[in-house]
Length: 156
Image (cartoon, rainbow, N blue to C red):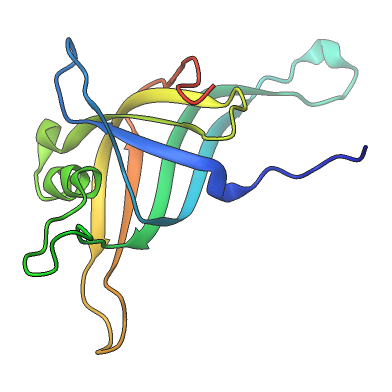
């Protein structure tokens, strides 16, 4: 047996539409792109005792998720646009400022891999518009507010 690659499309994103004491994890549907980024701040911690070899130390990390997708409607209701609840929760937070734009999320691999995280994020939402034949897009960046926490993968 050979090895197989993990698919990027295996990622799932849920937003807490409940409270911190009673979370309601609502999936975000329609994603077509998902990118996790961790940025590190490095400081030189070289000293005279290293025989001329330099050294760096991580002093801070920041994380963010960048996601794109298509706005979807409820397939059973063609007359009225009923937005995806997960997308709508992110859009609503993206229209607020200050701590109102912070939401709780969790993201994990649907294939059962152990990669699963939870944290608080700020929302930068974009989307809407396009050509006459285009499907309406959405995009958002979720900027980590402090440390993310490893969780047991809900899909495992």
